[in-house]
Length: 475
Image 1: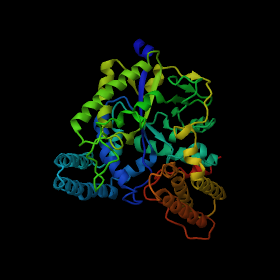
Image 2 (image 1 turned 120 degrees about the vertical axis):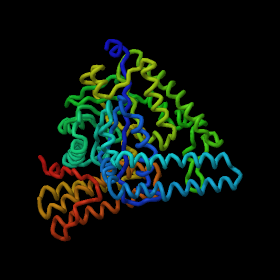
Image 3 (image 1 turned 135 degrees about the vertical axis):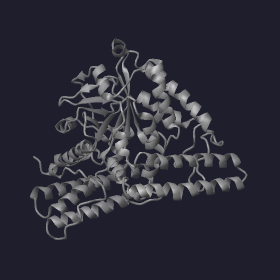
């Protein structure tokens, strides 16, 4: 224990999130994102995380969709693997053979096995990934806001309560125990937010204070309201995140951007045919380098929090799971303590009273990704919908089904993902279409509340089944 306290420890935090796409479009934008994440990210990680001291944030909106995959959504996922992915791999492999590229063709056929394994792994886990995450030993599960809303951008106390209360209720209903860990969506923080977090039982959350010299980024901070803010460490995270000099851009790794006719990826970043054994060997080398650098950061002690989007590992960075597996193996061998965040807070005493500044882990470390002129319609539309919903809830008029539907449509509007996609030009007009559809449905539900329209069905597919609608009217 003395050595651990003296040297400090590394906390790996995986933010596991997907916007609600189940049932909302397929290709090129829609629920295939979810199916790819299940096949290439979540199932491979479940195979290696059991017993690992890792913190996993599971957003409620992702859990809503994984829950839906126990039924029809799971059937569609399996059809996608068997009826879409398998024949496309075969067709592109044959085409590459005819074009005189046998090495590329062989790589496409090898990669087809990923999807065969994903089908078998899904069936082998009883089509229930929530149960699989809940059964992991040694892992600490965190929750988040219901639909990954940027909390500082919400217009009302009631709107924040709806996101927080629904998120916490969803987690506790599904997983039972919750120890107060909360992933702050986009690490978006504004002073005073910790009071809302404390009101909903949050004990710890991550915050990005990059560039602040007055903050020791290896020391957790006790906020005035009680929850502990754990600074994330970009000096370490950039080894993975940096899209110019991070590990994933190495020429040996698989090129995410260069595609075959059917969007398959048999090339390396260096332009040659992808060599899986060479890439896996390099991932092991990079894991050793990561452990060495993390150990150097911790020479004076502290809690080094390395937070990553889970979907980076296996999707954007194909070798990510191999790298993570090697990190989990190499760290104990190198004497680097790996801990969950809660374990880390037992080892490293938080600093009381240090003032935190408004921040996010977005562009320029501010809220411009979600609140710039480019996406002003997104931000103001969500705020206007929130104000109208809160006002309607306060009147208690109309059928309850209409209020429940309005609350769910509001949650969908508040997702951070739509503005992020638009800002980064990642999904054509998909985010605009989603926002317009949810706004129309919210209008219809609010009209039912004032008696000018029939009451709609309360459900939005499986979004927020544990909706805390009472939080809209709680003083």
